Image (cartoon, rainbow, N blue to C red; front, side, top):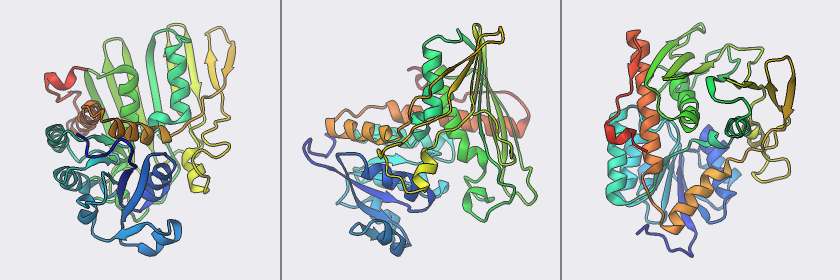
Length: 356
């Protein structure tokens, strides 16, 4: 049993109304039929009231995690609070969505997956970048065989933020740094396309003056006949292609990034005219100097919460999302180990965690 009537709206409690909660989760939840945002855990009730009049605000995050008035708990709080809040919500019989990264380490991820399975509750991570226009466009081109078997894949999340900001994501505390922040997105997309790698080799660095956590990451995933390069930096003023892929029949380049985050920041409602539209075409190079263009696929991060609503509403609870989250955490942790030791690292996964 899911604890939700098939005909009832799924009552949602959102913990955290900082950047992620306010920019992504609240608008996307409210844009999906079947989800009813009932509670928000925040110590800034005035800001919530200004944006969402009528939504109840509670300061204590654990009160939201265990509230009888919600069926689904969404956790968008600092990274070191993800695991304890998720444990509390699962123990109270709630379905749970956690913002990335899932947890701080693989052991915590495994424990939460076990608990969700024991209680037959949905447990997933907000890997919203699966539904970005840039990724959907490249994924479709590869699936259509436009460049043949892929032998080199490169994915960049590069920005220009030369000043270290006073926020926990860039701090020295647990869960800070660019690899915890952007690594889960880069890894989740790569694993969707190519599955689990054999080994991970990583280099993490602090390059900005005054940096307190890693602000540059370069990670290589080794496959038998493929190399995947994942890169993130805070010091790229001129921009870089979002994706590069080289295959046996040609190459593709996707230069522009998805625009949904900018649209949300500008106040555009999910689903409004122009939502997720990407004007940047995909470039296809055939090796003869000829370049053709393919229109970008529109992005739509509402699809994440549509999937959550469908799974809970239909009682179709399985282990797929939790297992995917554990695999991403294994790669994330292997990269940290590689960066610390200077060695390539095999994934610390059990045989049952490697089986689809």
